[in-house]
Length: 280
Length: 340
Image (cartoon, rainbow over all chains, first blue to last red; front, side, top):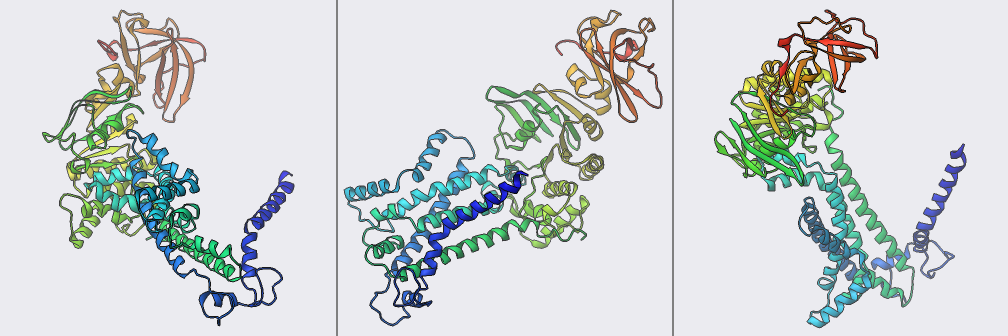
Protein backbone atom coordinates (compact mmCIF):
# COMPACT_ATOMS: atom_id res chain seq x y z
CA UNK A 1 0.00 0.00 0.00
CA UNK A 2 2.60 2.42 1.14
CA UNK A 3 4.99 1.64 -1.68
CA UNK A 4 2.31 2.25 -4.33
CA UNK A 5 2.48 5.96 -3.61
CA UNK A 6 5.88 6.28 -2.03
CA UNK A 7 7.96 4.50 -4.64
CA UNK A 8 6.76 6.46 -7.72
CA UNK A 9 7.09 9.70 -5.78
CA UNK A 10 10.64 8.91 -4.78
CA UNK A 11 11.44 7.81 -8.33
CA UNK A 12 10.12 11.05 -9.76
CA UNK A 13 12.04 13.04 -7.18
CA UNK A 14 15.23 11.15 -8.06
CA UNK A 15 14.76 11.79 -11.77
CA UNK A 16 14.20 15.50 -11.18
CA UNK A 17 17.20 15.65 -8.93
CA UNK A 18 19.42 13.96 -11.50
CA UNK A 19 18.15 16.32 -14.20
CA UNK A 20 18.98 19.27 -11.98
CA UNK A 21 22.39 17.77 -11.28
CA UNK A 22 23.29 17.16 -14.88
CA UNK A 23 21.28 20.02 -16.42
CA UNK A 24 24.30 22.32 -16.80
CA UNK A 25 26.28 19.56 -18.48
CA UNK A 26 23.44 18.75 -20.89
CA UNK A 27 23.08 22.41 -21.86
CA UNK A 28 26.83 22.66 -22.33
CA UNK A 29 26.89 19.60 -24.57
CA UNK A 30 24.05 20.84 -26.74
CA UNK A 31 25.58 24.30 -27.15
CA UNK A 32 28.93 22.83 -28.13
CA UNK A 33 27.34 21.72 -31.41
CA UNK A 34 26.44 25.30 -32.35
CA UNK A 35 27.31 26.46 -35.84
CA UNK A 36 30.23 28.77 -36.64
CA UNK A 37 28.17 31.95 -36.67
CA UNK A 38 26.24 31.05 -33.55
CA UNK A 39 26.94 32.25 -30.06
CA UNK A 40 26.95 30.54 -26.68
CA UNK A 41 23.17 30.65 -26.38
CA UNK A 42 19.98 29.12 -27.71
CA UNK A 43 18.63 28.64 -30.25
CA UNK A 44 20.99 26.40 -32.14
CA UNK A 45 21.24 28.01 -35.54
CA UNK A 46 22.57 24.89 -37.19
CA UNK A 47 24.05 21.68 -35.80
CA UNK A 48 27.76 21.35 -36.52
CA UNK A 49 31.04 20.17 -35.08
CA UNK A 50 32.71 23.43 -36.07
CA UNK A 51 33.75 24.37 -32.56
CA UNK A 52 35.41 21.01 -32.03
CA UNK A 53 37.43 21.55 -35.22
CA UNK A 54 38.19 25.05 -34.07
CA UNK A 55 39.38 23.81 -30.71
CA UNK A 56 41.69 21.23 -32.22
CA UNK A 57 43.03 23.69 -34.80
CA UNK A 58 41.43 22.10 -37.87
CA UNK A 59 39.15 25.02 -38.68
CA UNK A 60 40.21 27.85 -40.99
CA UNK A 61 41.23 31.01 -39.26
CA UNK A 62 38.32 32.83 -37.75
CA UNK A 63 37.69 35.97 -35.78
CA UNK A 64 37.77 33.87 -32.61
CA UNK A 65 41.26 33.03 -31.47
CA UNK A 66 42.01 29.45 -30.58
CA UNK A 67 41.47 28.47 -26.94
CA UNK A 68 44.89 28.64 -25.20
CA UNK A 69 44.47 25.32 -23.46
CA UNK A 70 47.14 23.12 -25.01
CA UNK A 71 50.00 23.83 -22.62
CA UNK A 72 47.78 24.26 -19.59
CA UNK A 73 46.10 20.93 -20.29
CA UNK A 74 49.49 19.25 -20.33
CA UNK A 75 50.49 21.02 -17.12
CA UNK A 76 47.32 19.98 -15.37
CA UNK A 77 47.73 16.35 -16.37
CA UNK A 78 51.38 16.27 -15.29
CA UNK A 79 50.53 18.00 -12.02
CA UNK A 80 47.60 15.66 -11.35
CA UNK A 81 49.81 12.68 -12.11
CA UNK A 82 52.59 13.84 -9.77
CA UNK A 83 50.03 14.56 -7.07
CA UNK A 84 48.42 11.16 -7.53
CA UNK A 85 51.67 9.29 -7.12
CA UNK A 86 52.86 11.21 -4.07
CA UNK A 87 49.47 11.35 -2.31
CA UNK A 88 48.72 7.68 -2.87
CA UNK A 89 52.13 6.55 -1.65
CA UNK A 90 51.82 8.79 1.42
CA UNK A 91 48.22 7.72 1.97
CA UNK A 92 49.02 4.00 1.85
CA UNK A 93 52.05 4.41 4.10
CA UNK A 94 50.30 6.46 6.74
CA UNK A 95 47.18 4.28 6.72
CA UNK A 96 49.48 1.31 7.25
CA UNK A 97 51.06 3.17 10.19
CA UNK A 98 47.64 3.87 11.68
CA UNK A 99 46.81 0.15 11.84
CA UNK A 100 48.65 0.07 15.14
CA UNK A 101 48.11 2.64 17.86
CA UNK A 102 51.16 4.79 18.36
CA UNK A 103 51.94 7.72 20.56
CA UNK A 104 50.37 10.86 19.14
CA UNK A 105 48.25 8.98 16.60
CA UNK A 106 45.21 11.06 17.55
CA UNK A 107 46.76 14.47 16.83
CA UNK A 108 48.56 13.09 13.76
CA UNK A 109 45.22 11.91 12.37
CA UNK A 110 43.62 15.33 12.71
CA UNK A 111 46.66 17.11 11.32
CA UNK A 112 46.44 14.98 8.18
CA UNK A 113 42.69 15.51 7.85
CA UNK A 114 43.14 19.26 8.30
CA UNK A 115 44.60 19.41 4.79
CA UNK A 116 41.19 18.82 3.25
CA UNK A 117 39.25 20.83 5.82
CA UNK A 118 40.91 24.23 5.67
CA UNK A 119 39.53 26.61 3.02
CA UNK A 120 41.57 26.47 -0.18
CA UNK A 121 41.63 30.23 -0.56
CA UNK A 122 43.31 30.62 2.82
CA UNK A 123 45.98 28.00 2.31
CA UNK A 124 46.59 29.32 -1.20
CA UNK A 125 47.01 32.83 0.09
CA UNK A 126 49.19 31.63 2.96
CA UNK A 127 51.40 29.66 0.64
CA UNK A 128 51.75 32.67 -1.68
CA UNK A 129 52.79 34.91 1.22
CA UNK A 130 55.18 32.29 2.57
CA UNK A 131 56.87 31.78 -0.76
CA UNK A 132 57.23 35.55 -1.14
CA UNK A 133 58.77 35.82 2.31
CA UNK A 134 61.18 32.98 1.66
CA UNK A 135 61.95 34.24 -1.82
CA UNK A 136 60.79 31.07 -3.56
CA UNK A 137 59.29 31.56 -7.00
CA UNK A 138 55.70 30.36 -7.31
CA UNK A 139 55.20 27.63 -9.86
CA UNK A 140 52.61 24.99 -10.68
CA UNK A 141 55.21 22.24 -10.20
CA UNK A 142 56.42 23.69 -6.89
CA UNK A 143 54.17 25.66 -4.61
CA UNK A 144 50.95 24.44 -6.27
CA UNK A 145 52.16 20.88 -6.26
CA UNK A 146 52.78 20.98 -2.51
CA UNK A 147 49.29 22.33 -1.87
CA UNK A 148 47.72 19.75 -4.17
CA UNK A 149 49.41 17.01 -2.16
CA UNK A 150 48.31 18.55 1.13
CA UNK A 151 44.76 18.66 -0.25
CA UNK A 152 44.50 15.21 -1.84
CA UNK A 153 46.62 13.23 0.61
CA UNK A 154 43.88 13.18 3.31
CA UNK A 155 41.44 11.70 0.78
CA UNK A 156 43.87 8.96 -0.21
CA UNK A 157 44.61 8.40 3.48
CA UNK A 158 40.94 8.04 4.42
CA UNK A 159 40.25 5.67 1.55
CA UNK A 160 43.16 3.46 2.59
CA UNK A 161 42.16 3.68 6.24
CA UNK A 162 38.73 2.29 5.34
CA UNK A 163 40.36 -0.48 3.29
CA UNK A 164 42.72 -1.48 6.10
CA UNK A 165 39.81 -1.38 8.52
CA UNK A 166 38.25 -4.35 6.75
CA UNK A 167 41.57 -6.01 6.10
CA UNK A 168 42.03 -9.46 7.60
CA UNK A 169 45.34 -9.29 9.42
CA UNK A 170 45.61 -13.06 9.71
CA UNK A 171 46.61 -13.45 6.05
CA UNK A 172 49.70 -11.37 6.82
CA UNK A 173 50.40 -13.47 9.88
CA UNK A 174 49.93 -16.59 7.78
CA UNK A 175 52.57 -15.29 5.41
CA UNK A 176 54.96 -14.53 8.28
CA UNK A 177 54.42 -17.99 9.74
CA UNK A 178 55.50 -19.42 6.38
CA UNK A 179 58.86 -17.72 6.85
CA UNK A 180 58.21 -14.81 4.50
CA UNK A 181 59.77 -11.52 5.62
CA UNK A 182 57.55 -8.52 6.47
CA UNK A 183 58.69 -6.65 3.34
CA UNK A 184 57.90 -9.57 1.05
CA UNK A 185 54.63 -10.09 2.89
CA UNK A 186 53.61 -6.53 2.08
CA UNK A 187 54.60 -6.94 -1.54
CA UNK A 188 53.11 -10.39 -2.14
CA UNK A 189 50.08 -10.41 0.16
CA UNK A 190 49.06 -7.02 1.56
CA UNK A 191 49.50 -4.92 -1.56
CA UNK A 192 47.67 -7.22 -4.00
CA UNK A 193 44.74 -7.43 -1.60
CA UNK A 194 44.49 -3.68 -0.97
CA UNK A 195 45.12 -2.81 -4.63
CA UNK A 196 41.47 -1.97 -5.42
CA UNK A 197 41.63 0.56 -2.59
CA UNK A 198 44.86 1.99 -3.97
CA UNK A 199 43.13 2.47 -7.33
CA UNK A 200 40.31 4.37 -5.61
CA UNK A 201 42.79 6.53 -3.76
CA UNK A 202 44.55 7.29 -7.06
CA UNK A 203 41.29 8.19 -8.77
CA UNK A 204 40.38 10.54 -5.93
CA UNK A 205 43.76 12.23 -5.95
CA UNK A 206 43.82 12.63 -9.73
CA UNK A 207 40.35 14.12 -10.14
CA UNK A 208 40.71 16.42 -7.13
CA UNK A 209 44.04 17.74 -8.34
CA UNK A 210 43.00 17.93 -12.00
CA UNK A 211 40.35 20.59 -11.41
CA UNK A 212 41.68 22.22 -8.26
CA UNK A 213 41.17 25.96 -8.49
CA UNK A 214 41.47 28.06 -5.34
CA UNK A 215 44.81 26.74 -4.09
CA UNK A 216 46.27 26.84 -7.59
CA UNK A 217 45.04 30.36 -8.29
CA UNK A 218 47.30 31.83 -5.62
CA UNK A 219 50.32 29.63 -6.11
CA UNK A 220 50.64 28.73 -9.79
CA UNK A 221 52.71 31.74 -10.73
CA UNK A 222 53.02 32.64 -14.41
CA UNK A 223 52.17 29.33 -16.10
CA UNK A 224 48.52 28.46 -15.67
CA UNK A 225 46.89 25.10 -15.13
CA UNK A 226 43.78 24.13 -17.07
CA UNK A 227 41.08 25.38 -14.67
CA UNK A 228 42.86 28.72 -14.43
CA UNK A 229 43.26 28.98 -18.22
CA UNK A 230 39.58 28.22 -18.79
CA UNK A 231 38.54 30.73 -16.19
CA UNK A 232 40.83 33.27 -17.87
CA UNK A 233 39.09 32.93 -21.23
CA UNK A 234 35.69 32.76 -19.61
CA UNK A 235 36.03 36.16 -18.01
CA UNK A 236 36.90 37.87 -21.30
CA UNK A 237 34.61 36.55 -23.98
CA UNK A 238 32.68 33.32 -24.40
CA UNK A 239 32.41 31.26 -27.54
CA UNK A 240 31.04 27.74 -27.93
CA UNK A 241 34.59 26.39 -28.30
CA UNK A 242 34.85 26.41 -24.53
CA UNK A 243 31.78 24.18 -24.39
CA UNK A 244 33.35 21.83 -26.87
CA UNK A 245 36.37 21.72 -24.63
CA UNK A 246 34.18 21.05 -21.61
CA UNK A 247 32.64 18.07 -23.37
CA UNK A 248 36.04 16.70 -24.31
CA UNK A 249 37.43 16.97 -20.77
CA UNK A 250 34.30 15.31 -19.40
CA UNK A 251 34.86 12.48 -21.86
CA UNK A 252 38.45 12.28 -20.67
CA UNK A 253 37.28 11.96 -17.05
CA UNK A 254 34.81 9.29 -18.09
CA UNK A 255 37.59 7.40 -19.79
CA UNK A 256 39.57 7.44 -16.55
CA UNK A 257 36.50 6.22 -14.72
CA UNK A 258 35.95 3.41 -17.21
CA UNK A 259 39.61 2.34 -16.94
CA UNK A 260 39.22 2.39 -13.18
CA UNK A 261 36.07 0.31 -13.41
CA UNK A 262 37.67 -2.24 -15.73
CA UNK A 263 40.78 -2.60 -13.57
CA UNK A 264 38.60 -2.95 -10.51
CA UNK A 265 36.40 -5.57 -12.12
CA UNK A 266 39.35 -7.52 -13.39
CA UNK A 267 40.95 -7.49 -10.00
CA UNK A 268 38.00 -8.28 -7.81
CA UNK A 269 36.74 -11.09 -10.06
CA UNK A 270 40.15 -12.72 -10.16
CA UNK A 271 39.58 -14.67 -6.97
CA UNK A 272 36.47 -16.35 -8.31
CA UNK A 273 37.49 -16.88 -11.89
CA UNK A 274 37.56 -20.67 -11.51
CA UNK A 275 34.06 -20.88 -10.13
CA UNK A 276 32.82 -22.51 -13.32
CA UNK A 277 34.96 -25.61 -12.94
CA UNK A 278 33.54 -27.26 -9.88
CA UNK A 279 33.92 -30.80 -11.16
CA UNK A 280 37.55 -30.79 -12.22
CA UNK B 1 60.45 -29.98 22.10
CA UNK B 2 58.61 -26.75 22.80
CA UNK B 3 58.98 -25.38 26.31
CA UNK B 4 57.15 -22.44 27.86
CA UNK B 5 58.51 -21.19 31.13
CA UNK B 6 56.48 -18.82 33.34
CA UNK B 7 54.95 -17.09 30.33
CA UNK B 8 52.64 -14.17 31.16
CA UNK B 9 50.71 -11.80 28.97
CA UNK B 10 48.51 -8.92 30.05
CA UNK B 11 46.23 -6.66 28.02
CA UNK B 12 45.89 -3.44 29.95
CA UNK B 13 44.44 -4.54 33.27
CA UNK B 14 43.30 -7.98 32.12
CA UNK B 15 45.62 -10.94 32.53
CA UNK B 16 45.33 -13.41 29.67
CA UNK B 17 48.15 -15.72 30.69
CA UNK B 18 49.55 -15.87 34.19
CA UNK B 19 52.80 -17.80 34.41
CA UNK B 20 52.19 -20.65 32.00
CA UNK B 21 54.54 -23.63 32.28
CA UNK B 22 53.99 -25.97 29.40
CA UNK B 23 55.91 -28.59 27.44
CA UNK B 24 55.03 -30.04 24.06
CA UNK B 25 57.21 -33.16 23.57
CA UNK B 26 58.64 -34.29 20.24
CA UNK B 27 56.42 -36.16 17.80
CA UNK B 28 53.25 -35.62 19.81
CA UNK B 29 49.72 -34.57 19.09
CA UNK B 30 49.09 -32.15 21.93
CA UNK B 31 45.53 -30.92 22.39
CA UNK B 32 45.03 -27.76 24.42
CA UNK B 33 41.56 -27.49 25.91
CA UNK B 34 40.16 -24.26 27.24
CA UNK B 35 36.95 -22.24 27.38
CA UNK B 36 36.58 -19.32 25.03
CA UNK B 37 38.50 -16.36 26.40
CA UNK B 38 40.83 -18.59 28.41
CA UNK B 39 43.86 -17.34 26.48
CA UNK B 40 44.31 -20.30 24.12
CA UNK B 41 44.74 -18.15 21.05
CA UNK B 42 46.99 -15.75 22.94
CA UNK B 43 49.22 -18.66 23.87
CA UNK B 44 49.55 -19.72 20.24
CA UNK B 45 50.19 -16.17 19.10
CA UNK B 46 53.00 -15.84 21.62
CA UNK B 47 54.58 -19.06 20.40
CA UNK B 48 54.25 -17.99 16.76
CA UNK B 49 55.67 -14.56 17.56
CA UNK B 50 52.71 -12.44 16.50
CA UNK B 51 52.83 -11.10 20.03
CA UNK B 52 55.51 -11.09 22.70
CA UNK B 53 55.09 -12.27 26.30
CA UNK B 54 55.37 -9.71 29.10
CA UNK B 55 57.32 -12.23 31.13
CA UNK B 56 58.77 -15.69 30.76
CA UNK B 57 60.64 -17.55 28.06
CA UNK B 58 59.65 -19.71 25.12
CA UNK B 59 62.16 -22.13 23.65
CA UNK B 60 62.12 -24.64 20.86
CA UNK B 61 64.67 -27.48 20.90
CA UNK B 62 66.48 -25.68 23.70
CA UNK B 63 66.89 -22.47 21.73
CA UNK B 64 65.06 -19.37 22.93
CA UNK B 65 62.61 -18.09 20.36
CA UNK B 66 60.79 -15.32 22.19
CA UNK B 67 61.96 -11.99 20.82
CA UNK B 68 62.78 -13.48 17.44
CA UNK B 69 60.78 -12.14 14.48
CA UNK B 70 58.00 -14.56 13.65
CA UNK B 71 59.16 -15.27 10.11
CA UNK B 72 62.45 -16.66 11.45
CA UNK B 73 60.91 -19.00 14.03
CA UNK B 74 60.08 -21.81 11.63
CA UNK B 75 56.73 -22.52 13.29
CA UNK B 76 53.66 -23.41 11.28
CA UNK B 77 50.30 -21.82 12.08
CA UNK B 78 46.89 -22.98 10.87
CA UNK B 79 44.25 -20.32 11.47
CA UNK B 80 40.68 -20.79 12.50
CA UNK B 81 39.49 -18.82 9.48
CA UNK B 82 42.14 -20.55 7.31
CA UNK B 83 43.58 -17.16 6.23
CA UNK B 84 44.22 -18.30 2.67
CA UNK B 85 45.58 -15.71 0.26
CA UNK B 86 42.45 -14.70 -1.66
CA UNK B 87 44.31 -13.46 -4.72
CA UNK B 88 46.18 -16.73 -5.35
CA UNK B 89 45.12 -20.15 -6.56
CA UNK B 90 45.27 -23.26 -4.40
CA UNK B 91 48.66 -24.26 -5.81
CA UNK B 92 50.04 -20.72 -5.46
CA UNK B 93 48.85 -20.68 -1.86
CA UNK B 94 50.69 -23.90 -1.11
CA UNK B 95 53.83 -22.85 -2.99
CA UNK B 96 53.87 -19.40 -1.37
CA UNK B 97 56.14 -20.25 1.54
CA UNK B 98 58.59 -22.28 -0.55
CA UNK B 99 58.88 -19.52 -3.10
CA UNK B 100 59.05 -16.38 -0.97
CA UNK B 101 60.44 -17.37 2.42
CA UNK B 102 63.42 -15.41 3.68
CA UNK B 103 65.50 -18.46 4.52
CA UNK B 104 66.48 -20.73 1.60
CA UNK B 105 63.66 -19.98 -0.85
CA UNK B 106 63.27 -22.42 -3.72
CA UNK B 107 63.88 -21.07 -7.20
CA UNK B 108 63.64 -24.26 -9.16
CA UNK B 109 60.09 -24.27 -10.58
CA UNK B 110 60.04 -28.03 -11.06
CA UNK B 111 60.94 -28.62 -7.46
CA UNK B 112 58.32 -26.15 -6.27
CA UNK B 113 55.73 -27.86 -8.44
CA UNK B 114 56.68 -31.32 -7.21
CA UNK B 115 56.58 -30.38 -3.56
CA UNK B 116 53.32 -28.49 -3.97
CA UNK B 117 51.72 -31.48 -5.61
CA UNK B 118 53.09 -33.81 -2.95
CA UNK B 119 51.63 -31.57 -0.24
CA UNK B 120 48.25 -31.43 -1.99
CA UNK B 121 48.30 -35.21 -2.31
CA UNK B 122 49.07 -35.53 1.40
CA UNK B 123 45.87 -33.67 2.27
CA UNK B 124 43.85 -35.37 -0.44
CA UNK B 125 43.50 -32.45 -2.85
CA UNK B 126 45.27 -33.79 -5.92
CA UNK B 127 44.08 -31.93 -9.02
CA UNK B 128 42.73 -28.92 -7.15
CA UNK B 129 45.81 -26.78 -7.66
CA UNK B 130 44.44 -24.57 -10.43
CA UNK B 131 41.32 -23.55 -8.52
CA UNK B 132 40.74 -20.22 -6.86
CA UNK B 133 40.49 -20.43 -3.10
CA UNK B 134 36.96 -19.01 -3.18
CA UNK B 135 35.88 -21.84 -5.49
CA UNK B 136 36.42 -24.64 -2.99
CA UNK B 137 34.47 -25.79 0.07
CA UNK B 138 35.25 -25.12 3.73
CA UNK B 139 36.80 -28.51 4.33
CA UNK B 140 38.97 -28.15 1.26
CA UNK B 141 40.09 -24.71 2.37
CA UNK B 142 41.08 -26.24 5.68
CA UNK B 143 43.22 -28.77 3.85
CA UNK B 144 44.83 -26.10 1.70
CA UNK B 145 45.72 -24.19 4.86
CA UNK B 146 47.23 -27.34 6.27
CA UNK B 147 49.14 -28.21 3.08
CA UNK B 148 50.45 -24.65 2.85
CA UNK B 149 51.86 -24.95 6.37
CA UNK B 150 53.17 -28.52 6.12
CA UNK B 151 54.97 -28.03 2.82
CA UNK B 152 57.45 -25.72 4.57
CA UNK B 153 58.29 -28.47 7.07
CA UNK B 154 58.01 -26.37 10.23
CA UNK B 155 59.52 -27.56 13.50
CA UNK B 156 56.10 -27.54 15.14
CA UNK B 157 52.59 -26.85 13.84
CA UNK B 158 50.13 -24.72 15.82
CA UNK B 159 46.46 -25.20 15.00
CA UNK B 160 44.03 -22.58 16.28
CA UNK B 161 40.60 -24.26 16.48
CA UNK B 162 41.19 -25.63 13.00
CA UNK B 163 37.88 -27.48 12.89
CA UNK B 164 35.77 -24.70 14.37
CA UNK B 165 34.52 -23.49 11.01
CA UNK B 166 33.52 -26.95 9.75
CA UNK B 167 30.23 -28.78 10.16
CA UNK B 168 30.01 -31.77 12.51
CA UNK B 169 30.38 -34.53 9.89
CA UNK B 170 33.38 -32.94 8.27
CA UNK B 171 34.87 -32.24 11.68
CA UNK B 172 35.00 -35.87 12.71
CA UNK B 173 36.49 -36.85 9.37
CA UNK B 174 39.14 -34.13 9.55
CA UNK B 175 39.96 -35.30 13.09
CA UNK B 176 41.06 -38.68 11.81
CA UNK B 177 42.90 -37.19 8.86
CA UNK B 178 44.78 -34.66 10.96
CA UNK B 179 45.95 -37.43 13.24
CA UNK B 180 47.01 -39.62 10.33
CA UNK B 181 48.86 -36.78 8.57
CA UNK B 182 50.70 -35.90 11.75
CA UNK B 183 51.77 -39.48 12.33
CA UNK B 184 53.11 -39.71 8.81
CA UNK B 185 55.19 -36.54 9.19
CA UNK B 186 56.40 -37.11 12.74
CA UNK B 187 56.17 -33.41 13.62
CA UNK B 188 54.49 -32.14 16.80
CA UNK B 189 51.05 -30.57 16.52
CA UNK B 190 49.68 -28.20 19.14
CA UNK B 191 45.94 -28.15 18.57
CA UNK B 192 43.85 -25.63 20.46
CA UNK B 193 40.16 -26.30 20.94
CA UNK B 194 37.20 -25.50 23.12
CA UNK B 195 35.60 -28.88 22.62
CA UNK B 196 36.47 -31.59 25.13
CA UNK B 197 35.45 -34.37 22.72
CA UNK B 198 37.78 -32.98 20.07
CA UNK B 199 40.63 -32.65 22.55
CA UNK B 200 40.18 -36.17 23.93
CA UNK B 201 39.82 -37.70 20.46
CA UNK B 202 42.77 -35.94 18.88
CA UNK B 203 45.38 -35.62 21.54
CA UNK B 204 48.12 -38.05 22.43
CA UNK B 205 48.21 -35.65 25.33
CA UNK B 206 45.62 -33.15 26.50
CA UNK B 207 46.36 -30.00 28.46
CA UNK B 208 43.70 -27.90 30.16
CA UNK B 209 44.15 -24.13 30.16
CA UNK B 210 42.09 -22.13 32.66
CA UNK B 211 42.55 -18.93 34.63
CA UNK B 212 45.64 -18.16 32.57
CA UNK B 213 47.47 -21.34 33.56
CA UNK B 214 47.89 -24.92 32.46
CA UNK B 215 45.78 -26.83 34.99
CA UNK B 216 46.78 -30.31 33.95
CA UNK B 217 48.59 -31.97 31.07
CA UNK B 218 48.06 -35.72 30.74
CA UNK B 219 47.12 -38.58 28.45
CA UNK B 220 43.44 -38.28 27.49
CA UNK B 221 42.20 -41.35 29.40
CA UNK B 222 44.22 -40.36 32.45
CA UNK B 223 42.87 -36.82 32.34
CA UNK B 224 39.31 -38.01 31.88
CA UNK B 225 39.33 -40.53 34.73
CA UNK B 226 41.65 -38.66 37.09
CA UNK B 227 41.35 -34.90 36.72
CA UNK B 228 43.85 -33.33 39.07
CA UNK B 229 41.78 -30.35 40.11
CA UNK B 230 38.30 -28.91 39.92
CA UNK B 231 39.15 -26.69 36.91
CA UNK B 232 40.40 -29.60 34.84
CA UNK B 233 37.35 -31.65 35.82
CA UNK B 234 35.00 -28.80 34.88
CA UNK B 235 36.46 -28.57 31.36
CA UNK B 236 35.84 -32.23 30.65
CA UNK B 237 32.10 -31.64 30.85
CA UNK B 238 31.63 -35.06 32.49
CA UNK B 239 32.08 -34.31 36.19
CA UNK B 240 29.71 -32.92 38.82
CA UNK B 241 31.63 -30.69 41.16
CA UNK B 242 30.02 -29.96 44.49
CA UNK B 243 30.86 -29.35 48.11
CA UNK B 244 31.64 -32.44 50.19
CA UNK B 245 29.45 -31.20 53.05
CA UNK B 246 26.30 -31.81 50.97
CA UNK B 247 26.71 -35.57 51.43
CA UNK B 248 25.43 -37.61 54.34
CA UNK B 249 28.79 -39.41 54.79
CA UNK B 250 31.72 -37.55 56.24
CA UNK B 251 33.80 -36.82 53.16
CA UNK B 252 35.80 -33.97 54.62
CA UNK B 253 35.81 -30.41 53.31
CA UNK B 254 36.13 -28.72 49.95
CA UNK B 255 34.96 -29.55 46.45
CA UNK B 256 34.59 -33.14 45.31
CA UNK B 257 33.77 -34.47 41.87
CA UNK B 258 31.72 -37.41 40.68
CA UNK B 259 31.27 -38.32 37.03
CA UNK B 260 27.85 -37.89 35.37
CA UNK B 261 27.66 -41.61 34.65
CA UNK B 262 28.59 -42.77 38.15
CA UNK B 263 25.67 -41.27 40.02
CA UNK B 264 22.54 -43.28 40.69
CA UNK B 265 19.15 -41.93 41.68
CA UNK B 266 16.62 -43.33 44.15
CA UNK B 267 13.56 -42.09 46.00
CA UNK B 268 14.30 -40.16 49.21
CA UNK B 269 15.54 -42.48 51.94
CA UNK B 270 15.93 -45.45 49.59
CA UNK B 271 19.64 -44.98 48.88
CA UNK B 272 21.93 -47.84 50.05
CA UNK B 273 23.49 -46.73 53.33
CA UNK B 274 27.03 -47.76 52.41
CA UNK B 275 27.03 -45.28 49.50
CA UNK B 276 27.45 -41.53 50.03
CA UNK B 277 24.26 -39.72 49.02
CA UNK B 278 22.93 -36.21 48.76
CA UNK B 279 19.47 -34.80 48.39
CA UNK B 280 18.55 -32.91 45.22
CA UNK B 281 15.49 -31.76 43.32
CA UNK B 282 14.88 -33.00 39.80
CA UNK B 283 14.66 -30.08 37.38
CA UNK B 284 14.36 -31.44 33.88
CA UNK B 285 15.70 -33.97 31.41
CA UNK B 286 17.40 -33.63 28.08
CA UNK B 287 17.33 -36.31 25.41
CA UNK B 288 20.55 -36.51 23.37
CA UNK B 289 20.03 -39.63 21.28
CA UNK B 290 22.10 -42.48 22.70
CA UNK B 291 22.17 -40.84 26.12
CA UNK B 292 19.78 -38.86 28.28
CA UNK B 293 20.83 -36.13 30.71
CA UNK B 294 18.91 -35.38 33.90
CA UNK B 295 19.43 -32.14 35.77
CA UNK B 296 19.14 -31.82 39.55
CA UNK B 297 19.51 -28.89 41.90
CA UNK B 298 21.24 -29.59 45.25
CA UNK B 299 20.36 -27.89 48.53
CA UNK B 300 23.00 -25.16 48.09
CA UNK B 301 21.93 -24.46 44.50
CA UNK B 302 24.64 -26.47 42.73
CA UNK B 303 23.50 -27.92 39.43
CA UNK B 304 24.10 -31.68 39.13
CA UNK B 305 23.86 -33.81 36.00
CA UNK B 306 23.28 -37.52 35.68
CA UNK B 307 23.76 -39.29 32.40
CA UNK B 308 21.79 -42.40 31.49
CA UNK B 309 22.64 -44.62 28.55
CA UNK B 310 19.54 -45.72 26.70
CA UNK B 311 20.75 -49.30 26.31
CA UNK B 312 21.24 -49.67 30.08
CA UNK B 313 18.69 -47.48 31.81
CA UNK B 314 19.27 -47.25 35.55
CA UNK B 315 17.21 -44.23 36.60
CA UNK B 316 13.69 -44.47 38.02
CA UNK B 317 10.86 -42.45 36.46
CA UNK B 318 11.54 -38.89 37.53
CA UNK B 319 8.95 -36.23 38.27
CA UNK B 320 9.91 -32.60 37.83
CA UNK B 321 10.09 -30.63 41.07
CA UNK B 322 10.32 -33.75 43.26
CA UNK B 323 13.23 -34.50 45.62
CA UNK B 324 15.49 -37.54 45.14
CA UNK B 325 18.57 -39.06 46.67
CA UNK B 326 21.64 -39.08 44.46
CA UNK B 327 24.19 -41.66 45.51
CA UNK B 328 27.49 -43.00 44.22
CA UNK B 329 30.19 -45.51 45.12
CA UNK B 330 32.67 -44.14 47.63
CA UNK B 331 35.59 -44.85 45.30
CA UNK B 332 33.95 -42.97 42.40
CA UNK B 333 34.53 -39.58 43.89
CA UNK B 334 37.57 -37.42 43.41
CA UNK B 335 38.63 -35.09 46.14
CA UNK B 336 40.62 -31.95 45.40
CA UNK B 337 42.92 -30.50 47.97
CA UNK B 338 43.91 -26.93 48.23
CA UNK B 339 42.40 -24.10 46.22
CA UNK B 340 40.18 -25.18 43.37
